[in-house]
Length: 316
Image (cartoon, rainbow, N blue to C red; front, side, top):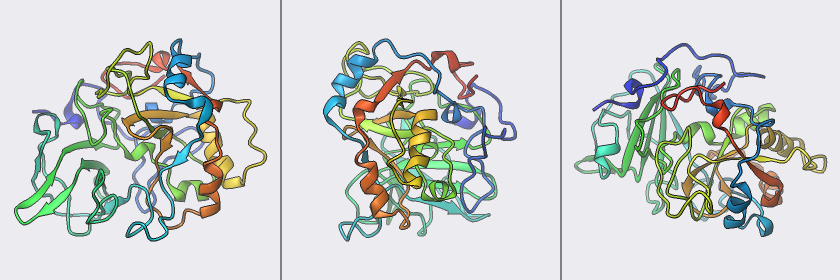
């Protein structure tokens, strides 16, 4: 079985610079996918998706605001809300993992150790995502429902990417996300917001999706048609007309990213929840601001013109 790193698609190559700055993971020299990758594509001038109005209606956009699914937990969890990122030191031992969804998981050894951070903490009941980047090889490993047992590591599913490659997962394969996408490139990270620029799309969820996916997604977990519900991989941007002047400078960094790179539908879940890393530095005042962004200020866009190949994340 081929892993995504060797699946059909654009061959691995040195990362290209991201327009406006490199999206490098803090604490590493690893750029989070090449600069020509779909996650870094500017969608501010793309045409609207013809089914977009129906998608927004199904998502309750007219009456909802966005919800940042990260930030201080105020004691409700062992640490802050969000999905933690583990940077594995050079030479970290890789271990086998037993998967529930074995047929669509990358059956390779994963750099999971006692120091690996689990979403929600070691005793969490939720999705229990683990995201690990190897500092020496710039590989990305992601698992869902991750557990260390007496018999070894288990997970619902697992996926692997080279961060220097535009290669996608095999068509129809899930990942640690229902869309078959990597989680890491869509996470808002406090380090990048604090530095003053976000150079990528942001992952988010909604409660019902179509039984379909669009590039660069690879998997669907929905029901119904795209005439009524958004497919996995659908992209939404904050309207250029949305006023940002009343927001703090940190909030404006995020709003600019939403206007330039947009949101990408990555999983089924609560409507208009968008994800960030589990960083203790997220200011409560910023989280409160982000909860005021109206979902009705977004529009669905047609990204088909960006695709170079159905099996590659490279964009025009």
